[in-house]
Length: 167
Image (cartoon, rainbow, N blue to C red; front, side, top):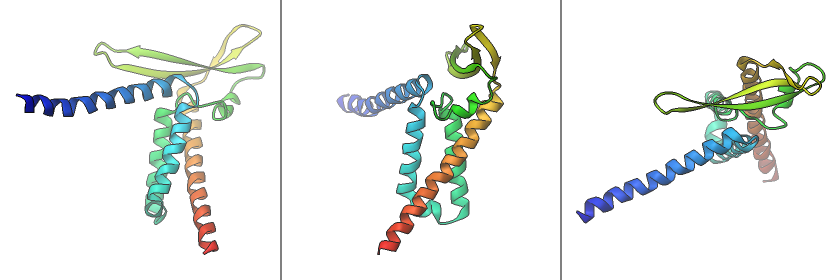
């Protein structure tokens, strides 16, 4: 009996720790601007450093890295940060500021969904003037992460060239 209990604890304790860590990551990435942006930059650069030679080796693996990195950016970085949200701000009319709201919804099965709604808020009128559609904000986010992926690969390529030149 002790062996079975020990085996279950050996399985359940790490599982509960992993679920708790994922929940904390989800909470912070959905509710605070910049957390997911920094995390994805670290993840992207770490992946390139760790698997750099395999990624840069051929065009197909470069494409796979860029696509996966961009999709992760769209999924996890809905909030963006003050730098990433500047292009979205340009969609707002003059004399308005960009406002982001997190809408949390639960379905009858208990699943929680987070949705980021960007709108243009007029300080003079004190209300939202224009709500930006998801395809515009998502499209901008896609282009941003495509660009960031290529820039990360460019930095890696530049670093490798500089180290080879020194040898």
